[in-house]
Amino acid sequence: MGSPLPLITVVLLLVCPLPGQERVPKSTQERSAAVDRVAALTPNDFKTLQSQARSGDREAQYLLALAYEDGRSVAREFAVSRSWMLKSAEQGYVPAQAGMGEMYLGTLSKQNGAIPDYGDADRWLRLAATQGNAEAQFWLGSGYERGLFGTTDYREALKWLRRAAEQGLPWAQFTLAQMYEGGEGVPESDSVAANWYRKAADHFTEVGGVWEAVVQLVYMYRDGRLRQDWVEGYMWCAIVDATFNPPSDDDIKWAAQRMTKAQIVQAQRMAREWIQRHTRQPQSTAQAKATEN
Image (cartoon, rainbow, N blue to C red):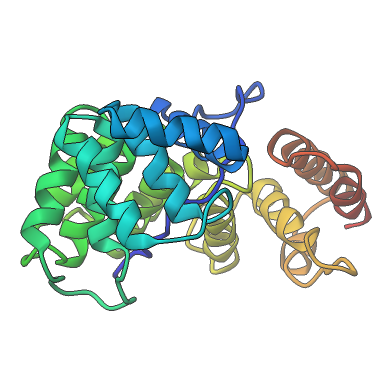
């Protein structure tokens, strides 16, 4: 199955994880900080950044590229963004090397298959990936899984996806789970897939790949593909149902019929605690919905 290729250009508002959460990669936190910094630029800040970039400062060149891509502190100009990103990448700045690779993938459709200039995309992503950039590792792995670089190579895909997943990148963990669920380059295993979905789910919910993993766990429990742990199955269903307004109980009915009252209370408590750990403020509404379920 072709895994989704998300845009990792959103602001990820990341801070230290709460107890019990997976830590996101350092490169992801640095990317988030850079995007936040660019979004807060004043006109004077932008002039200073522009001057630094023109003098050859590779970090300033990268930030200027993000500014022209973002379009908040200056008019959006993708060609200018690409030019500054390339200048920074050619100086060996790892985030910019990853950014160049992502730019080659930026016009992707949802279809699999080779992309134009895939050699350049592979080269830039590989430069950043070998230096530990988790986003580049993810894109490189996803590209080989989907055949974007001229061939489908599950061995290469798994190598890079595992590296990103082991650093804690939710999209990589989600994609690995999908590969195990579908038996792509690995023995098909719902239990291994579920373990990777659980890891992906153990981050703040606005981070890409987290909510997708939660929903997939609901499907797996509801379809009877995992060991019949009704408490955990109910918990995941209650978390999803709590997002509806008004709250829904469609997904939890199948589990509740097989559970004792004490088990239902336990599962509701687990759902409330999960929402508290994984959802940023305001939390009160989501917690109340989980209680109602």
